[in-house]
Image (cartoon, rainbow over all chains, first blue to last red; front, side, top):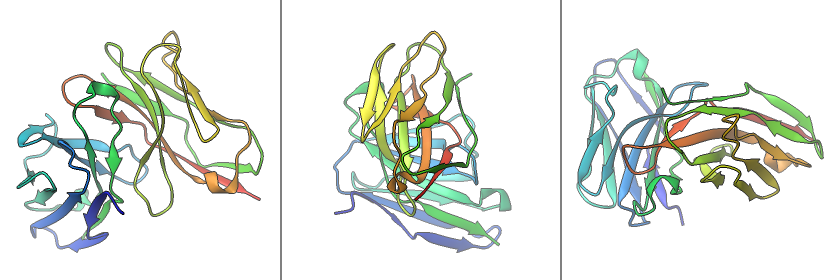
Length: 115
Length: 113
């Protein structure tokens, strides 16, 4: 009964080769988030969707893109991965109806390695 | 700017010991404060939260009190168990979107029998 599912658990790509990470949810939540977490660092928000409304963080590199084709799915595209993009990528969801005190539901993450 | 600072780990304790993990934050306005926990191989999950000054969040024997005067939200538990071994993340919300969170770097807790 997993609620936020990220695939794959581990992803290996080559330097400069585009890669897509996927996230799906069974909660029917309005908001989906992508966080980047490098080793021993805080998770950092890259962007989020409220429904189909895309919100990019000011310091998110242009190399990172996202798509949300429907309520259930959200994708993170890294157009030209560099060695510095190796990290754990976390997908999360929330209802989007309770302002700033809402609970986020996280997937287990995708660990990306760049060779 | 907005930030969260939490004590570095790992924190290693014996079972039934008292736990404190310190967390301080910098934020504008009146953020909500959270503790999330990540057990091995799993995603982050909400442990507790507090939404205004002097509120106490509690869950599974863990407690944290929103201290606006010291901008702190320290996590405590009176008697830890081996099953509490995990990474604990302090976070606060900030305005500008739906529950956008600023996280600390996490504190790893290891509890030994």
